[in-house]
Image (cartoon, rainbow, N blue to C red; front, side, top):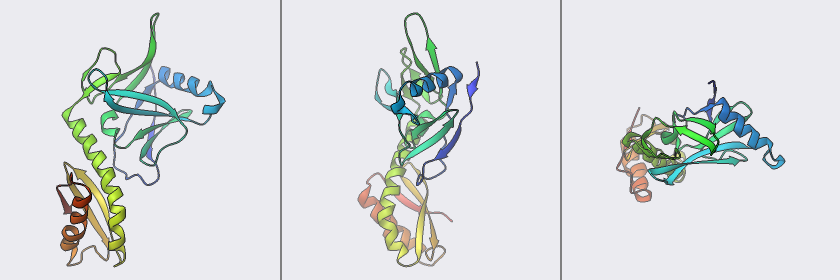
Length: 213
């Protein structure tokens, strides 16, 4: 069985660095194209793939036709359509393989997920590995940190500086100061007195903020 080649890009405004590889078999891709072509109202739509709490094992997959990517989506190019995945869900879906099967009694999409520690017999529900769950939690917190930084940056920018979020791991936010803030003698004070203090006020999940060169 052949599979479809896919190329990932980010929607405008989404930080880069999030891994996402999704594999659709030819059968799955043909089925998606058939669904898109079956109604003029879905012309130009893409396929949204997600996970949500529920099902037999803790998480369940979700598929839907969507008109466009959201502001926090990763976009995966597919032959004839695009696939949209929320950046916060990417750690739970990275490496997933999607097929479409038909039998005398049933038909539907099936999922093979390397991030699953256990899967339900229905094939649509799974339990995630601890590493995948932690990565998903980090991605969700990073999205909130990026939103909070929009409130913090004006304080830095009025003095000619700025800050970029480099990573968020287990509640530790790493930032890089740029402009007038980068390399100045007050850099450490800016991180702890401005960025860390404000992030902790807005997001109790943030444990500390570290400065990276």
